[in-house]
Image 1 (cartoon, rainbow, N blue to C red):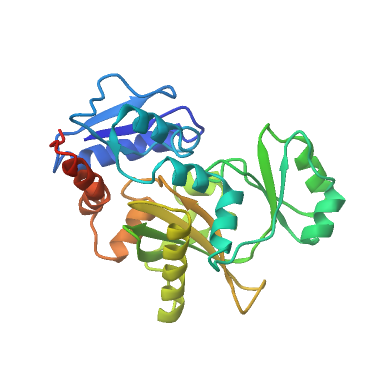
Image 2 (image 1 turned 120 degrees about the vertical axis):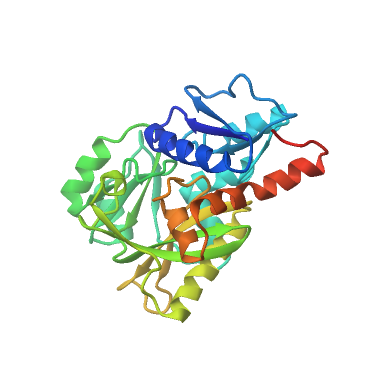
Length: 310
């Protein structure tokens, strides 16, 4: 096995932690090498005849299909979503369109390029005058996410955006939920309760700032509805092997259809305390068993090709 970690995105340190944990877990079943990548290229020493890649690269290049396209061109097998599904799930706008077509709820949004932002009054006229969420269209781990209230705060935020595509959505008030999906089947539902009220980058990666309930305290019909929505979203985006799907169970917006997709993470964090492993523990999987399960379809694809991996 070849574990890819690090990379060049804003999530490099998160990825390195995931990579070390997964390499240790995989080494219990396979000869395993950890590659700590420092640029957007395949590392030297990777051998298509001997290696299957298990990547925990996050953000740009790792999750947007760039790394997957290089692996495909080199003939190297890998676990997880293929290049097309990776590119789709990294694009929040395209993801929302794909899942909405399958009946999964999504929030309305204004999408724009940073160098041509809309007027604050125009956004409020379209989305309403409550709290709004401003976030990059193609980043993970809540990088760049901000909550704004009123036209003055929104105008100030719009004036200082970094280059790229951005979106603005109404802030959905409710319970934040996360579900792992492995081989098309949803695992347990985890509830996320940030003490600040906003699950931003600091709340995700600062110890003690967020409470996690695994399993989420939901009744059985609601739990199953969340799992079905996760499986539907996974299939709608053409995901393969595994992913993590995040939702808001809204308390106010729409009592008839309160579940809204937040995002699909094709290469989620993989420390033992990360959300996908939490979801898996709800279904009885320990960390080592989960990682082995995540790579098993790739191992089968590899063996079908007639080569035994190192």
